[in-house]
Amino acid sequence: MTTTLDPSTQQHPVHPVRVTRRRPRREQEQGERSVVSALDRRRPGVRFALGVGGTLVVGLLVVVCGGPLLWLFKAATSTSTETLASPFALWPSGLRWENFSEVWTRVEFSRYFLNTVFLILGSLFFGLLVATTGGYGLAVLRPRYAKVVSALVLATLFIPGVISLVSLYLTVVELPVLGISLVGTLWAVWLPSAANAVNVLLMQRFFASIPAELFEAARIDGAGPFRIFAALVLPMSKPILGVISLLLLVGAYKEFLWPLLVLPRPADQPISVVLPRLEGSIDYAQFLAALFISVLVPVVLFLLFQRQFLRAAGNAGALKG
Image (cartoon, rainbow, N blue to C red; front, side, top):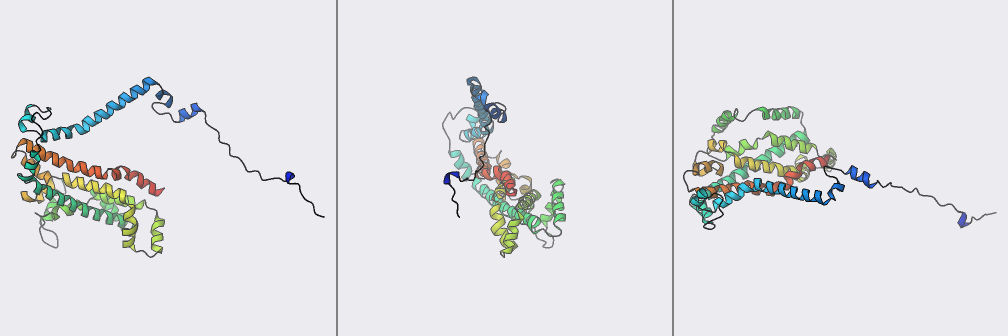
């Protein structure tokens, strides 16, 4: 004998219902409260004060940060007499764009600018080569002597540059084993600038933050150390590569003492060495035009690498998570 159940009497499974408690409005405002709460921001007087204060702060920052650059542009496009007589007058006799062309051709500033480009590009290439390979060897390959090498690299940070200046110069004058001199060539600037302990340690720390499972998976697929370095590590290291590139470019561009020592010929010297010599030998307006051109280079470099520079720390931490 079979019995049939009435569909109306069948029990259906009851799914638990998640009940979310809505926090009271006052509790939300207290949890999100900062210096000025959301309730205070609704008041017209507070909003007006915040708007005025923010405008003043932004305006002050523009004046402090961009004011010198704007004044330098104004002085570079004016005559020497106008700049000395009325430093803040806005072009009484009009813009003089010819100051840039004169300093670029007559003073041969284009040659010094080209020397600077070669100098910073070579420093960038060799600096990245040493930093990436050194950091990869210490953080990923990890030979037995990796800790000793890391300690030695870290120890070089405690040696002031002035102390090692003489020994470094003697090394460049006559290279050990080879017995050749690098003085008067860009190699004398490229090679010492590439041996930067800070860049090597930054790359080591970034490479160490990459999950080890990625390297294990690449080795299982048959990838060797060079392929892992070129196809896996470098593409993931764009943020820190941008930061180190900016540091290398700016450091090579602003260096004065070392290029002055190892590049004795004026025709081979970069802008940083040439500008003090040009100050008393050319017109004041042309000298300011040369200064403005030299200032634009680091500004453009920062604008190109600002995203990598500002986000490198966050991306480095995100890899571990």
